Each structure stands twice: as structure tokens, then as C-alpha cells.
Image (tube, rainbow, N blue to C red; front, side, top):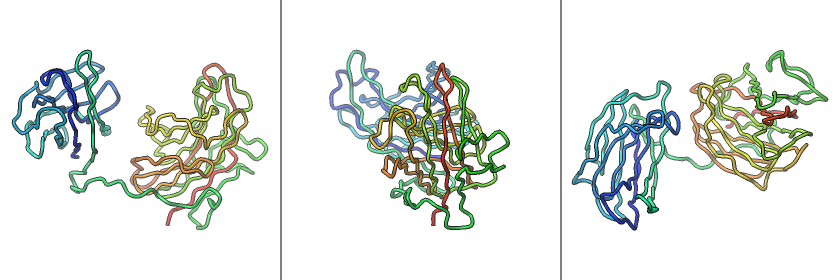
Length: 338
């Protein structure tokens, strides 16, 4: 792939040749393991690897005439990656080739900025684009995905799916527990529960779910939450919309069992708070974009990487650190988008 970003140097810098730098992150597994291509206001560049929290200098700080130096200077940084080889471009000129060890399953991209010692410097990023080298086509964010509203989220085609949990469906597995026409989930204290509906897969679809918070909660600010799983390849790889009893939500991706935030935990007035609160979640999915609605209110869009042939849906629940909590799911519906 090719990663590009336009970056502006700080408007105030005490020393142009200080440690102040800004750049693009690539081949990232997590916050302690990634690669970084960066530039300095003084007209230099460098490439680093962050490995288990330790910095490894791959390409020492080097001056280059193609870098626009000084305060408020705007530069374009591009990194082209092919297998374990890379090349850094600055303002469309190749300045350095390098070799690396990309994560086996692919890595995340990001942005990086560093200030001078004892001084706060403001770096600005105008954009970031990731291009598939095979297609040479930039990723352009499309308009917000559209689909049926939560009121109209009901099956209309034979390929759609709905379960009101009035009777057991073997597609949920033999461990599914039903109480009064609801799917009840009781994760162990400080534990979580994942249940996928494996018989069906969806990609471009609208997924709706009604979830009820536990009736007994010791600490509303704890990590306990329930939610909707989508784009699931297996129990170790999926996306999740999480809702918390204290009125916050988040969107997370699980990659090989490790959870990473897509939308960090955030408060929303659209959420009904407290014990026993019932909330309607809706995710509209089109290609690699999603739009989240809570109780019919559009909350936020987000990017994603759906499985090539589509993924399963499911439910997720998590208990407090020191108490078991019972989450209940009233229904789930999947409508394929036209």
C-alpha cells in the first residue's frame, strides 16, 4: 500500500533542529510496536521502528533539500510499502528506501507528532490517504451510509434475518440461554461473553438490536457493557458497538483476540442511562464504512475492513470487575442494503 499525509510544521519553534517532529505511522500492531517516517522543521527526516516500547533508529536524521523547512511549512509525506520493503517520499521525491518486518496480518496506520523539550508545539495534519498498490486507487470517504431507520428495521427480503428470541434458534449454539422471550447473557465477573450467529453472513447491510442493561450494577463507571457484533470472521476477529450503563458508547475491533478502539468510549445524550435501561442500536454498513445510530439518533460514522465475503452478526456482553452482570437482548434484525 501507499500512505500519504500533508503536514504543517508548528507556527512557533524555538530551535528548528530540536527533537520536534511530525510524521506518519505504518505497520502498527499497537501503541508500542510500529514504524514511523517523520520530518523536522529544520529540513531533515528520519525513519524509526518502535519495538516493544523501545525506539530503533532505522534511518538516522538526514537533511534533504526537498523538505520545506521553517515554521508553518507544509510538506507531503508518502510511504510506499511492498511486502517487507518500503520507500519514503517527500513532496513526491523519493528520499529513502528501507527494509522492515510488517505484521503478518497487516498493520494499522496513524499520525505522530513530537514537541521540543519543555515546549509544546502544535503540528497540523490536513489529511491521510491509504492506497492499494494493486489498484493504485486512493481510499475516498463516501457519503454517510444510508439504510432503514430503526423503526423500519424489519426483514423485507428472503435473505434478511430477524430473531425476537421467542424460541431457541440452533444457529446461536446450544449454550444460548432464554428468559421471558429474551436472550440472557451472564459473563463471569471481570469476564466477557461472545455469541455469533454463524449460519448467515452479511456485508452491506443494516443491523439493529435492542439491548437491556443489567438490573444490578455496583459501579456504573466500570467497564461493563453490552453490544452488537458485526463483520465477524470468528470469535477472535469482529467489530462491536458497545453501550455502557453510564451513558457512553464505543466501537471496537477485535483482531486475533486483541481489542482496539475504532471510536473510543464517548458520552452521548442519545443513550438511556442507568440499570435496566433499554437502548436500540443500529449500524448501517456499506463497503468499508459504517454509521452508528442509538435510539434513532445518528451518532457517528466510522471506517472498517469487512471480511471479503461478509461476516456474521452476534451479541457481546461484559461484566464488572468484581461482579457478574446479566445483560438481555430483546431482538436482532439484519436487512441487506439495496
